[in-house]
Length: 259
Image 1 (cartoon, rainbow, N blue to C red):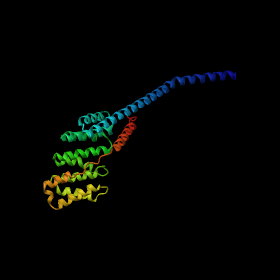
Image 2: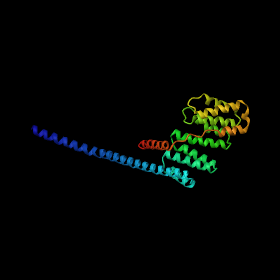
Image 3: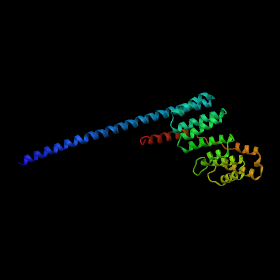
Image 4: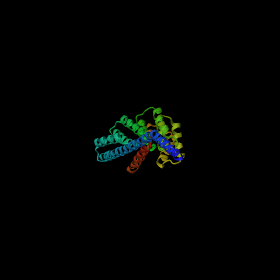
């Protein structure tokens, strides 16, 4: 009799396992299939991103070589290709190069547009703020209203912005250009007292204060000379550019799964 009960219990257990298998195996199989699809999609996306980064790098290098040999048309085409296929870093760098070509061709409006695009192309504050500052310099040269110049430069002059000293100096020059002598002097004084201010910027600020205090700042020639003395925006070496591009590519790859 005991054997009969054990046999019945075994049959019931087997039926229960079969029922559980019919219920859960399709679900588990579906989850595994989804995981496989996600892994393949990630692999494909990663391969595509690496391929695009390689294409952008090669195009950018061709542009630099063409530019150094005086082939501006070839450089422009190469930089356009790099901006089209590259990630944020390469796109920002290539757009800045295109803006430089437009500036050299005496087309400041196009140069400003390209610098603005470059600033939007990268989330890296160093790359983006360099582009914004270059655009602001060009806007100053167009004798735009002071409000337009301040709208561009004031955010760049805030704490912890990478181009803060250069933006502060440009703000002072712009205010001096528009007759806001007291405001300009205040900007220059902040630079002479500030920390981590490059020596060249500090010296220009001190010279501007002396010019204002002597009363000669009302002379437009002095203002023009002072504005022309604005230091160039610090340029990154090719190695730094490559590092920025690699960092941007890595960040973009990390964000891809979440998207």
